[in-house]
Amino acid sequence: MPQTNTLLLNCTAATMAGAGYGLIPQATIACENGRIAWIGPARDCPRAFAAFRPHDLGGRLVTPALIDCHTHLVHGGNRANEFEMRLKGATYEEVARAGGGINSTVTATRQASVDELVASALPRVDAALAEGVSVLEIKSGYGLDTETELNMLRAARRIPRKRNVVVVTSFLGAHAIPPDYKGRADAYIDDVCIPALRAAHAEGLVDAVDGFCEGIAFSPAQISRVFDVAKELALPVKLHAEQLSNLHGAELAARYGAMSAEHLEYVDEAGVVAMARAGTIATILPGAFYTLREKQAPPIDLFRKYGVAMAVSTDMNPGSSPLSSLLMAMNMACTLFRMTPEEALAGVTVHAARALRLADHGTLATGQVANLAVWNATHPAELAYRIGFNPLHERIIGTVA
Ligand code: DI6
Ligand code: FE
Image (cartoon, rainbow, N blue to C red):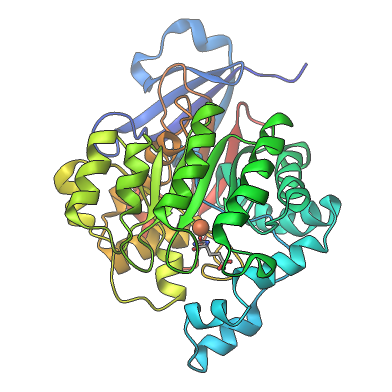
């Protein structure tokens, strides 16, 4: 039996519970059977925990382990050539319409076996874990046929057998129109997307249903038909909305009680109000904005005004956001979008957990899962502040290894 009861001593805890960072200086944290049994100032620690194995954190900062709530990290191949094309003047949409973009990753992903998908994903998983990540959301969406959509999700489900990480899956069959359905998006939804969703769900591969609502992808009416099936299967929904234009995807997402709407550069006030009413989280993805050299930032002030909680994520994918660093995403959210370091940290902890409906993750409090990140830092603002520097000291997943 591994020792599961640990007493973490001598740290500053940013609990992310309650208002702001929820800082506890000189904190003690008791971890029992993978959960936090007690957290508070050292001087108040009940004697009952004195028998736990002590682990001195040397005065370091402790936060909830980080959560990357929007990734496409399982995929075949890469698109460095399109990076070059775009830098020579082509736009993301032009590359996509010329048969590149998402569809070029589809070709590479269809050629890969589940084992190959897992093997190529693991270095990206490891990069995330090295920055203190304990939960990864992973989408399908580069198969666009039933077999490959299922293979992507099977690969995602296998990752926790290889690494100590929680994986939450999203079915993203409505990601792009494959070449054989060009001009027949509705037929693709009926013939492929919905049957693939049903098959993936029957195999227990789907935790949520996602879509790409955009001029180069699917209309709100098409996404609605997929979401109706999600509803029938009692699966929660989320949506790539308003990334490149405003199709009112955020309102559509809110109508279905979506967990989150993502990107949102072009969302308007009515969309934000609808999200606020539905409790839909805004997932901010600065990596795609940066990579595509977009000009319009998401309306952070409107999210603040209407109390829409903001998650921050990498959107780790081979095209629009080849970003695996969640710390870098936090920095970009601050520098590009003027989020505060506190909002950025909430975005990768408490609000990312809410965006995945993982109520017992993302904060440090009694009863929560004892997944923590220990940093060579003294104040949590340091996490978003440095660029290309990884201050992680250790990841504690349930107990000290
Ligand atoms: N929006 C994105 O940012 C990714 N998918 C999506 O719907 C892009 C995926 C890619 O370019 O491969
Ligand atoms: Fe995405």
